[in-house]
Image 1 (cartoon, rainbow, N blue to C red):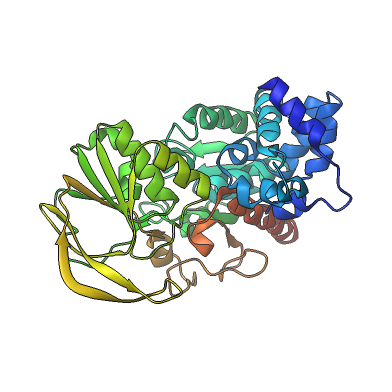
Image 2: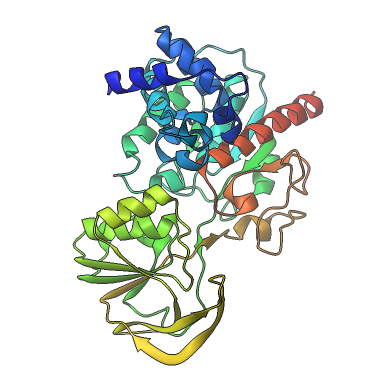
Length: 407
């Protein structure tokens, strides 16, 4: 590992206009980090990474590097791009446990963070590092949101989240688990108890349904529900997965690890929505892929499809009349997720888009002054690094708001 990343660092051209940095949604200063690493400044490099991206360890593992930093590396045009993700992972993973938690003078200003997914974690860390008293309200028993309950352990070790929790608590961040804001407590209670600003990072946890017959049958499940605790499901040997996004790939690989012998993913078009490396991993692990199939219903035997009709541009123009019954012990629907609406229903003035996502301005503030939001709950399911990038903007706006409104 060490020899590999040293060789990768030595290949860096230190471009004057680093396209790799431009390709990163959070603009990680890749040439600077690479040079510091070559100069054996491991902790200094880690500090730069963590300051720029508090979830650097996570992003080094789960980011779509092939379309971001590494996909923009000039060396990739005619050969192999520098695998900065490996360098970043080595540095940030080492730094997380060795990071010095500086004692910051507390401002005596309280901020609430609703949800401990990537956006919530990033906001909490930034606010705590700047002297604010942060409390995270998490509806589940562990922090991490989709990192904890939506990404399989073989892709992202949950030990990383335990390490993050320890460091966050050392920063003074308080975590209140099993507490749903919009249930027994609402945002009004938080304001009443003196929280000067509130951040919403509740993600998208409501599975998107297909609106077809059979979705309530016992042999049908939703992908995001399955990934939260796969051990409690008895899928049988044959599993049909509807969808070909990253969640569908995680579902397929998890099912194969939990006793399924034949897993097939279906899409109505000819395109794979997941990243190419997740698609390739899923192929390598033995899943099958069937394109051009539109699901029409689900029976106790499995899903029923119509065959798609394509034009010369591979666009679906219609479907053949004949129905095809596929036999499967279990059908898992993994076609997307939307937000839950508890906060919207219990918070006066909090407005949403037509998709139920929290409406925000350019500073990530909602339609209620002092309430901010970022991540999937604002734009729908997206990558971790995009959530962190937005969270940084939200945290800066929250600090400006609190400093100007608290006397």
